[in-house]
View 1: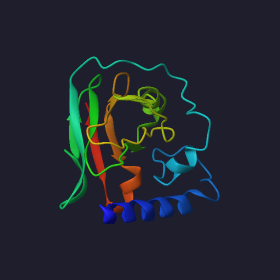
View 2: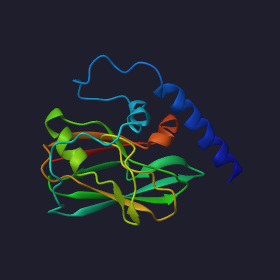
View 3: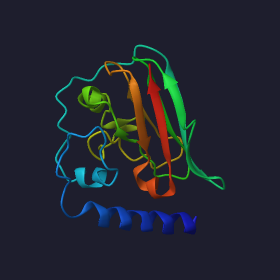
View 4: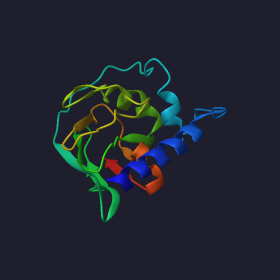
Length: 173
């Protein structure tokens, strides 16, 4: 437990140091740097202009885990259909979140709108654009709808554990 607190504190310090300074010159690329997520937390609210769309298909579950095998999403790679949803569950070793760092340009506003500032336990502030709230307690969950997005590859990570390679990918068909 003490080790987890040390790792969390070190991760927060590294991410805090990375988030200061100048912003990237252009936001037109299909990817955003994971370090930009903490900097976005200082803004009042995400600037999505799309309306959230409900899940119309299957809801998939992805566990967020830190144990003797390391930090990871299970499953880390998932193939879903437009309209499906993903329920991210803090199974072991939080806090965790989900932040999408590779999103097709045509889907950024819709995916951000489909990422509510709410967990299953109640209201929780998003860390930033395309970045859900922290899931602190075991079994906390956060569901993201993929309704209204374009097919493609969506890479994601856990912001607090990005340095520990906690990453995943969802392919939307």
